[in-house]
Length: 397
Image (cartoon, rainbow, N blue to C red; front, side, top):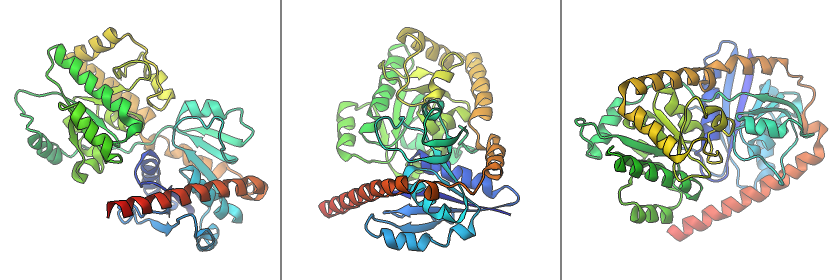
């Protein structure tokens, strides 16, 4: 029996790509014979999903560091594999691994850590080729692996989709196309939200009466109000019924503007998918000509448009208006997703890596100086965010 402890941390809000990646991999390992798997969450806010996943929660506010480390001291003897899914979780994983547990860190995308601190890692797994290329020549990385698969197979919730269409007064006949963006409502995703509205507007100008729809949790209420005033045509849904596990209502959309996981999940069910671009006002249709460019960047907003605006828009309209073209596109994107996005396609590689790695060489013991440098970073970030939460709560009350 191989015992695996997966770790994630919470310093701001317990939502985001790295949580879902950890949950998907955790679930896939639970189904594999010969594995005993547990999820540990360390942070200053207890996630609402923690009971659903039977996870362990340890409260950490940046001040109670000694208490947290004491509570973790026996975990090393209980698990063979310690696997972290974010930089701060990796700090606690390093501490636990001192008893010769094998240590792994999955970096779940994002910009390369240029000109800023990044810890030394023996076994780094990257979800994007952009990160792999950056770390290939890094002296801080001993072993590097590219493993992009992070999506579990799922079936959209037709009941919720029908319910939402009725709420939005979208008649089933004639069909009203929906251009959907699912993301947190904060400044980080503003560009992709605006590109979703722009695509819907262009489709309307070309005779397709599309509705732009934004679904997500609100992180910035000022931005929410600004969006409602600036884009009255944009339908915004923030209710937990739809914003939580939003992939269940992906079926409501015809075209989905996505980044990272949200794009992958849409692709898995055969939707027309577009990725935001950094150099144009429209998101780009993901097709066989450009998918590798955007996939390398984890389908982030950092991608550059590979088509002209007119060519891109023409292709989107052609697929939307032609059942044959849409069927061909759906078949292609589903086949690509099965190989590159579904976690089950990579779980055997991960398990092989767990077995092959030498457990005697660990970052904590061999890089004590770097461990304490990371400790300072962890404490500063968690204290700052804990104080910010207290200020926000007191202001709200």
